[in-house]
Length: 467
Image (cartoon, rainbow, N blue to C red; front, side, top):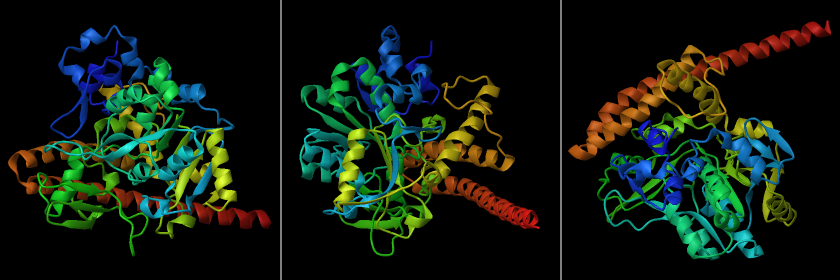
């Protein structure tokens, strides 16, 4: 039987906290700035008889995959896509009213939908990630909390690239009866859905689940590394903001703000060691084995509409994948009243807007699983199969190097912390990332070349057919 212990020891634990909730235990933060279940240190065997432990873990019980959970919970299933799952409608747009868009990471919809559901009486509060009062070095900068007022909801605006877990806040839900909107990344939403299968209180209390499009989880150490790169020592870093809006800051730029008692510094994260998000620095290894980019089990998915027609607007535009009839009606009313600017886009548009994520989580995953299979190592069963995709040698090298960057940064940053020497991290990682960047640039060049050749062939064929 596959156990939680095997998941953790094999590097597939995302630290979601579902097993901690099921066993009434706790999640702890390890030396790498990642959550892990306390039960693996306290004799997991005593919990193995409880089938709920395996049922709620998003990396176990493959019979409860995203497709099955979506069938069970969603009422918006007019269409189906192998990449974005079931959906009623796909939209792109932003909030016009108040300052939701200004204060948000992108189009402001994530905060707005919680405020709107509260105003309409559908919910009593929002469960989302907010600033945490840090008491010691190593404490998380952000944790899940419950917001019951408009101001509290607005205080939780902006995306946080930071590990979080759900067990603590779900215990709060049991002590505070009501209806709540839950907002999280795909693996956390999947974990909540599985908990709802076995826990009627949580099923009743959380009528709406919203997923954020996810690239991967970053450890707490990633946050520390960005601040340290600009001269703020990890022990002095007090607050952090991952994406900043402002004049001459394009929507695609991830400009962070790091703060200590004396100053606030601002920098483009791609300009510091390990800061470019998709290179995988200080990424949880479990994220290399996830196949859900857009949170297919959620009632609504919110992300960035990375499409040419929207990227010129530096204020940000949201991608919205709607899978709930109530939420669909709310958006239609807001559009008709001018409170939101929304345009209908296609399934292909939604996929294209997250093309890199799908390449990493589908093609890349099939290759990573094939490597595990060839070595005879255990891996979680996913909807994607080993060798399902034909992967070029160049892409294989990119996927291998990304995983190596994650492993290298995890170990080297810990060494830098223990030695109190940032250069240990910087000097070790920069060389590896330069190699990865060369591979990625080569991939972009050959892709552009292939597209150019394809267009010329199509043009020739059109001319030939007209002769």
